[in-house]
Image (cartoon, rainbow, N blue to C red):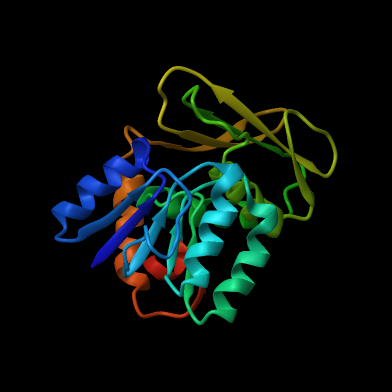
Length: 233
């Protein structure tokens, strides 16, 4: 495949390395805004940029009828508009708050546990995410996905909020320290015990591999997708 990388930071460089090892060609490595010319006619775009430019980056690619794999978090209030643009242009869009295979299994486990805890009202739930000091958004997109999975399966929570909360708001604690690639924990706590599930990333390679696998999967498809579609979860 011909792949264009929009956003060529640390993640972009790891994605490039993995894509080349899997036999793909990188036809563009953009730190600037994509255009019809500088994208260089790719089969797919992988977009890992910054929250403030992600929407416009994706919009340009979709309007050029190029499918987009997006891993940028912190811009999701505009995601419904992007999904509409993808459909209007007969192409494909896949957003992943986290492309790691392990994390997507963790998402499924989180939803299962939330369903099990649904009618056990002795427990309160909270989330914690720990990332490197360079991460600009908080909470992480992965933590938001975990929170949404709990809310969808809960009788108690109908919204999430950064930091500790009471009542029907699910609290997410965001910690920034050193060079941590990403650690996510879900806690259910009662007066007598605590249940915890946790995912710890050792490096960014899992995220990058998942993004390339998603790019391979989405070629020639039309519509809006998630990693659940890619992995058959």
